[in-house]
Image 1 (tube, helix red, strand yellow):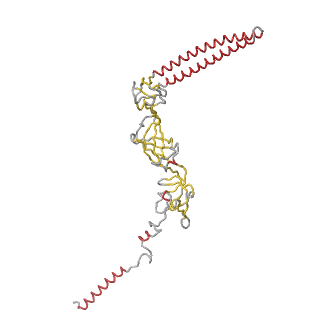
Image 2 (cartoon, one colour):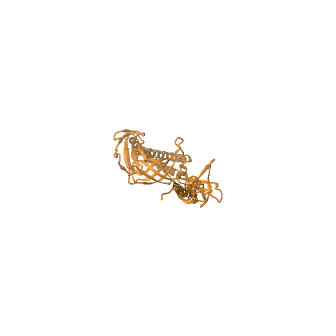
Image 3 (cartoon, one colour):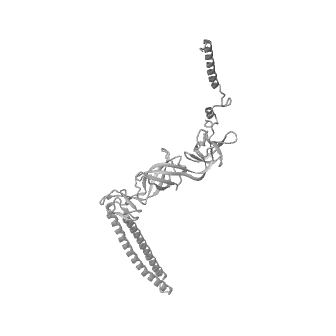
Length: 386
């Protein structure tokens, strides 16, 4: 049976009402969160919430070892270096060493031929011989007049001679005794002159002041030299030294005997142990640095003068120190402080610091082990975080 027009219209209206009811029920379904609760994204950004910008990061004061290590560049030099010079003028002779020659302490390196010094020494020896002869003659004369004076004293005691004759004999003995004393003084003077001449003559032999190696040879045999002429340069290469210029802020921490590690480009992958030998007592006003001398053994001779040295210096070290991450420190008007975590609001606490590195700082006073401080806006470096 054919549906009438009214029936068709009624069926269409029923179908449309059913679709509307289904769509409207999906839109108005109840929310899963209670009214007024933030979404999950909002909770992440809420101060104090997970991942929020206002989350407090803290660090705990701990007892740990702390080391301040600096790296400097210097140049390898011998521990000792001298230039061999003479004390007299003359012709260089008997030079038997060359660059690279090994020498022992006291070894003769060369001589300076000086005829004048030789003549002075011979003259002094002749003076001694003459003085010895004069002394011997004076002593013989004294012995003779001494015997005569003794005989005169005996005769006078027996009344055989006058007092005047006795006094004359005694006076003669005194005169000869004075002559002996003068001759002995001349001998002493001649001996001293010979000693001086011989010393100057001995100085014409140039000797090594220590065991080492000849680094430079400036002159050859036959050259005329004066006391200002450098003949050789000797170095003691059993030890090497590196001089670095430490910055002003490091100088107070550097102590004699501090450990250092030296590497050179010529020996990649190899390091040499060393120690601080000297620290300059003054700061250069232009560079604001102080010279620090580092000594290291070189028995192998592998370290050569002039090599570039890279020094890793332990400026300061403590095995047991109260430490905090460096980021926990704050400063205000010259005062250094931290924010100490308490049961209420964080409390400002001024502290005194010691060794400082890029990661940690030593606390000398103001905090105790186990105290917790707020590290605002920074990370505590992975240790001590809460």
